[in-house]
View (cartoon, rainbow over the protein chains, first blue to last red):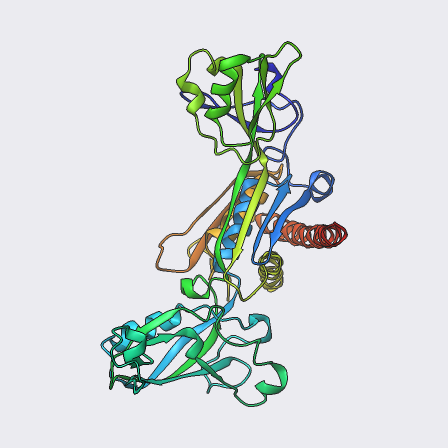
Amino acid sequence: MQSINDYKPRIILNEYNITQNLPSAPTVLDETFNIKKLKKIFRIVIVRYENMEMEFDVIGIHPFIANTFRRLMLSDVPSMAIEKVHIYNNTSIIQDEVLAHRLGLVPLKADPRLFQFKQDAEDNELDTLEFELKIKCIRSKDENKDSSRIDDIYKNSNVYSKQIKWVPKGNQLDSFKESDVGTVHDDILIAKLRPGHELDLKLLAVKGIGRDHAKFSPVATAFYRLLPDIRLTREVKGEAAERLQKCFSPGVIGLRHTKDGNKVAVVNNARYDSSSRNVFRYDDLKDAVIMTKVQDHFIFNIESVGALKPDVIFIEAVKTLKDKCLSLLSELEQI
Amino acid sequence: MPIAQLAGTDPAEEKSKTFVFHDEGHTMGNALRYVISSYDDVEFCGYTVPHPAESKMHLRIQMRNGRAIDALRRALKDLVKLCDHTIETFNEQLISFQTDQLST
């Protein structure tokens, strides 16, 4: 246990309980908030960035601050979504309100930073995007008369998100390209039609925040977890080493081959361990491992819906917090 | 008016105060509570969202020395500095990550 009492705050996952270590120096968890001290230990490391997904480490902050960033990304960073659906005609079997709800959840790829929040006034080009969905299903007059495939018999029997057409308002054509505005995915099934069924809809998208409705949330998920750390307290050899390897996620425990042909377990990379406690099933192994989590090391994962890049979402979240603080400060001046 | 004092409290009492934040919730509440309660002169700091259907947050500060409103002001300023530093560090790291990716 003594080896775990380093300078980092940790929780230790024991067999029956969770305990904390005794860090050798004061940590962010119990120190006075001081921006100079924080700047010394605060670090961000970007680990993975793939198109709309991102993983990065934030090191040296308090869990409450990390949680604030997560909450802000989920519910305070704005994005655009369809808010009003004017239904001129809907003869399909899907009800108006269900159809409107489905359309509201379709992700749009307009940059919300270029729009204003909608005021009570009339729609204008600064706060509203207008779309149109006009489609009618007919019986196909093709030669494939004998085919029983739905697509051969009917035309437009499936309504997809690619059929939503943007109708530029005012001078929107000058500031946006056709490719900047529209749905993120073009293959979302919106409704199914049969001959004679018709949809004629006007869709109005506005800017909003996730606290109001989940459709305005810019992220599919945004979560953090603590960095796992695994240490071996003694040498584990042979069959026991292979058993130990299987107790953890793949890649966490490696086997080193010694000169005398033995296998010795070593910790390769504990980062992607799922913290499963399989090791406690084996009486001969459980005293060989100390599983801990570092309490001031957060691994953030952001998956964007598609309108904003994940790094922009994080920056916007931090900016929202800053703006909130600044407006509250100016409010306090007046008291 | 986003900040008010809780009705019925003595305005002359400077050490202990309950602030009422409109349109705020756990996001600001927990962050402020953590920053304020880490200060040395603070005896107690806590927050509550009295009803989930009302977007109001109560923040209670009790001081050993000094005024409660000063602690709140200091916390807000500290959070602004934290945000600035976070944005700066994140952007630096992003640029160096992207240049690393291009070179490999």
